[in-house]
Image (cartoon, rainbow, N blue to C red):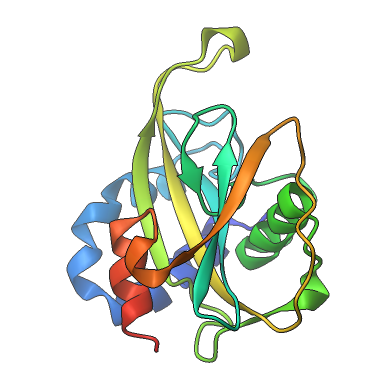
Amino acid sequence: MPPSPDDIHSVTEAYLSRHPDEREALTTLFAALAGAEDPTSRKTFPAHVTCSAIVVNSDQRVLHIVHRASGELLAPGGHNEPDDRDLRGAALRELHEETGIPRSAVIPFPGFEDTPLDIDVHVIDANPAKGEPQHQHVDFRWVFRLREEHAVTLQEEEVGGYEWRSFAQAASPTVRSKLSLLI
């Protein structure tokens, strides 16, 4: 059973206790949580929740993948599935699916076991082939430390490559600034 709106709201409030200045930026999320539709379903419009894994290796570098659909360099992540029980678990499932890195190879950064590093709201272009209008993803970005080196095995249908980047070169400016505070 996917995370409930109440569960998502609790995670969001824990996040906002660290970043109270971001409450207004999350109005889209609060509207989705108040709606009648499942906020974790990819068919919920105009916005739904997604989850990503920010993975940091022993060299303080961050894993990025080339997402084939967008052509962008992003953290591994994506849509929730009906069997995902919590948001962090959805990020870990996506990490494994897209990169082959198992849950056992990563651990949450201390202090981020139940709270994401970042929550980002961004626009996704319409995709007529999938019957999807332009909409927004509310991406819960969970931060993990790679505790054991592990080969990256890409999910070739969705992922076209990967890079380990320094914190200063992280693709997301908000992740970049928040990572710099961790180390």
